[in-house]
Image 1: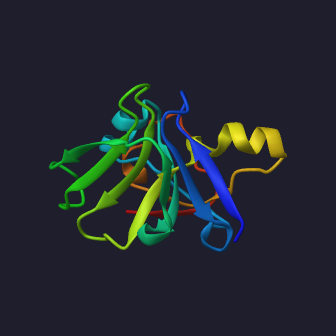
Image 2 (image 1 turned 90 degrees about the vertical axis):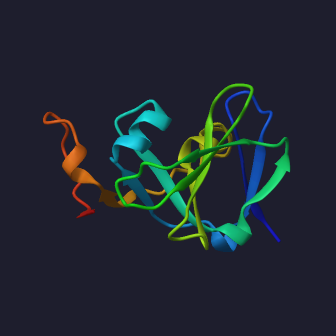
Image 3 (image 1 turned 180 degrees about the vertical axis):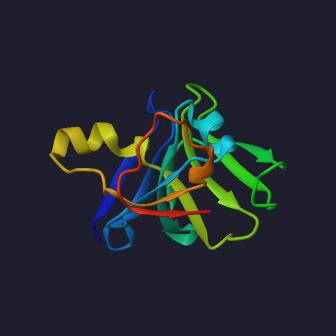
Amino acid sequence: MASVKGACNCGAVQISIPEADFPKESLLCHCLNCKASSGSLASLNLVIPTSSVKIEKGQPKKYLETECASGNTMDRWFCGDCGSACFSISSGLKEVSFVKGGLFVKEFKKTGRTMPAPAKESWWRHHEEWERAFGCDLVE
């Protein structure tokens, strides 16, 4: 079965997703926690069944976040060497993983594939006043 490969910035953590489970759209999250963990204005997330996320190399470290706006806790998995965010799993939605789009940018650059465009932006109320929405659904 064909799969989509991704890796952290240093390559110590590598994952694969079956092609059939790789989404056609992404989710931009503007919650304060995603902003902080991504080091950016939003986190580009690919919503993928947790059972489909395969760690091919390395072992990401986990940070348990207990103060999320949703009221759930969040397991945030990241590379312990370079610090790249890898994926997150919410206690309220364990069947899906929020896999970080940045894991795939180097491979996509090599293959000419493009990142799925955002279909939704969550926690928009936390956007910066100068930011502009992508024109997709705004959800909380």
